[in-house]
Image (tube, rainbow, N blue to C red):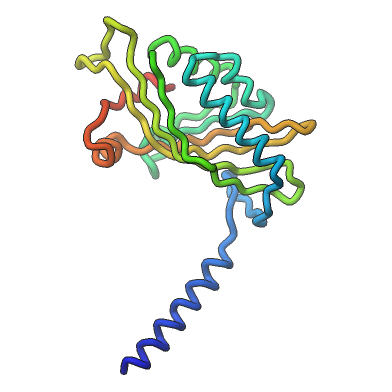
Length: 204
């Protein structure tokens, strides 16, 4: 009986391995791509953009932050922490809206801190001109001294997954699409032991 169990277990393990190896990775727009080895220079270029994205946001430098995007073809999508519910999704394709939104955040918060998982997960296309880049984020900020949100909240905490679509144009990588797969407020509070309140209206 034990030998039969071992054989069955071995077969299931082998089958699971082959199934896992056959799964194709999808880009954000659900177009299948082959898994390619990302050249070191492209990894460096993409990571440099992410570094500037983070730094620009943390110090409130709107020009540095916006410069990490391509304005042509730009798109932002957020599920607002309600995965599966499309009715409250936020989406726009005008880089000026992202600039206005970021400027609003920078003016409302001080001491913004962002943690991104490194290295990001990068999937690149055959031509090495487009890449899907994924990482996990935690972001925390405080309102200006002497101010508070309704309910006397003085801080903001958000967490989720970033899914970026990068494009390489004339040898330069920048972000064309940003999909913000945010965690719901209850998920964040459970995972982070009731950290700071989440104030979604201040984000976008």
